[in-house]
Image (cartoon, rainbow, N blue to C red; front, side, top):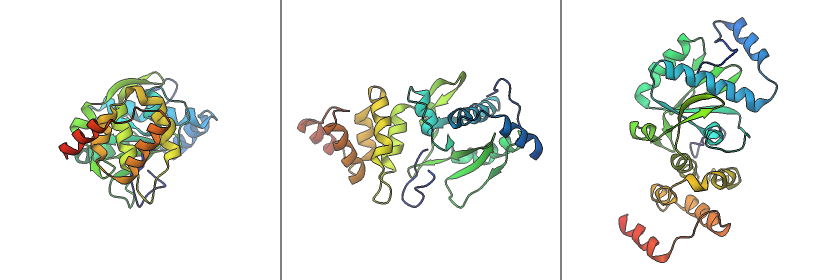
Length: 231
């Protein structure tokens, strides 16, 4: 799940054989028909919502643990599905999902909407680590197969930047992000992630951690001086 930051550390297409719920009874029947394996249930929900958004032409990108899986990470998914959408599209996305029979609600947090699909929670995030989701961010997404359904997926660099930028003194779970960094390290532009995180202390500590574990190459003194000169 994509972590947002300080005060909310707990949050954060057509599928063969499945039909969208059109009412409470249908939704319960679909939930009961899902596989027992929670990872597969989350994947089914991601595929279903992704196909709906694609069909209606919405700009979006898969985020969170399912995005890591799409980029080659282990199928060890967290408790929900994350999609990044632009703030200006939030209302139309909500209308599309409601028209497809999915309940959508507005939580107290003002940077996302929440939906339910096939018994799984879906977060529709329009702000990642205190920064609005932009057209440029979504255009950098990779078109990948998510358990046989193709959809845009946040780039590895943007995924790691969103996770590290969310680190704070109230939320700093290095252990959750370390396996992701190991898995995606060859696909991430680490210099871009460093620049994006600036001199924030928690991400900087994580970079040191990665260097000591030889997950990434350490910065040379010259590189550090160059980066400081850009700020």
